Image 1 (tube, rainbow, N blue to C red):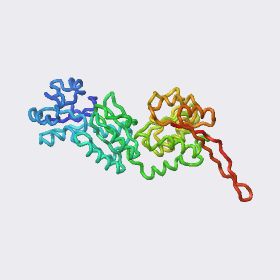
Image 2: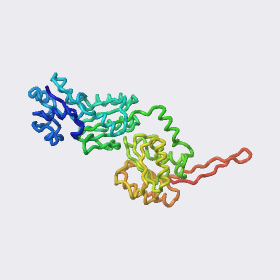
Image 3: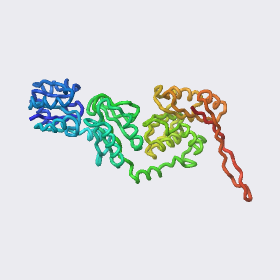
Image 4: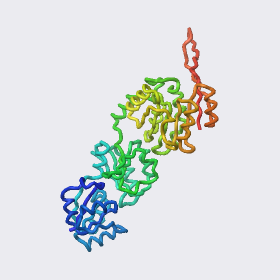
Length: 390
């Protein structure tokens, strides 16, 4: 009888006693090349070989060597190698280990109760994508097992449309393990075992709770820090960032974030994006973090100036609400070529410099009605704001 060993990662401590015993007794082991070195000590009597290509040739190999041990790098019995062998009617003993779904959930501190698992391994890509769309219409978390080198554009679009948080889990159970929440910037999956974890949809109660926690569309937000957070300025600034044109999972930089309302307004419209807010003043940075937590937003607040932070070309768009032309120039270096950049100023001299750098400038003027006896009104102007953009 042939034995299939399910092994997530490459750490021998993850193997059960029965799995270790099967490897120790084996004379022939078929396994991914990345495991050959460690299998040299776990299967000292065995010849260790790689999977044949195409994988269907493994059926003939097992027919000829009925005592072979096959190491499955994923979840044995869920598509992949075990199904190929089982469909051929071979006599198998399957020794599973922890599933990749369970390991990913543990790493993320998530429950996978009610989760749907979709495999892109061993099946047609378009069929798997259709299944992914169907399960995303539900409420539970979704786990997608990926092929090495698989294109990620279709998955990024599907996840962006769902508005859910997601992580790419790469090389689980190895020293190179990575949980990447900014995975949408990748064009393809790594050449090692990986999966996509997609959070469950928020319940109606959670949505209501978060909306009550912070109203980013309020005319006068709580803990507001000045004219740049007025509703009119925020909405124009966010519109100039063109949220409908940002790529799925975009990274957006907010410089001089103050209490964070511009970025949070953008995030409410595009919850799939990641926003990094820079605010050098400790008190305001603390309030920005509090506001992000109240909304449950995917926002990282750093107590720093833009000149001290962020590698060049790391962002898809940026908003500059403080720091003047110097901060604007530093921000331009950190936005990928042609990415949207919006900046606000109260000083016309600085605004003129911004126009030279960005190409467009407008003046936002708002006046509030105030009663005048006996039945009239007058309009009291607020401080005008200059908004520059490219």
